[in-house]
Length: 230
Image (cartoon, rainbow, N blue to C red; front, side, top):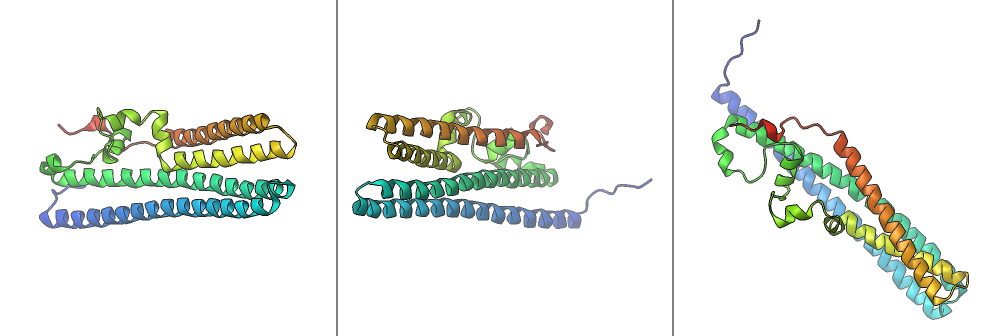
């Protein structure tokens, strides 16, 4: 039968050093996650801007003829494909960021386990359940920001949400150009573009929500808020 000895000051100091090192590692990894997300968005916007400029030059030469419509559909299809891949990567980076926050909350729980008297000085949470993660991210219960979290509006202000709107607009432009190429009138072209935009946006947002629900279903907190210390 093993005898458990109380932690000594030296063991506490070593534990704090290990926890602090891991905490800084997670902070650095989270910063890299944000950098990659912004880099992905900038890359997509650069591709989109280049395609629009190229189509403007082609339109001046072809006067929106058959050649322009054919080239525009191809170029915008490439832009839309890159956009879909970018949205998928951003959703993956958001999941990664969620886990880094979970890890930091668990480390914070360990800090307070060693020094519980420091709890009043922490703004972020020590619990790794969903409410604890949201508190660390700044969604304080009872605030306006927290009330918008579950709304559709919040989904559109995130990077994947905003990019989904742009990609859906590109899909709508492709559909409108296709309708124009088949000889559709202005009303048909506009209606086709609007329908394609709405369908693409619903598909992209629904895809992200399903992916988020699947990730949440497999998450099991180790330090839930219900186990809060007295």
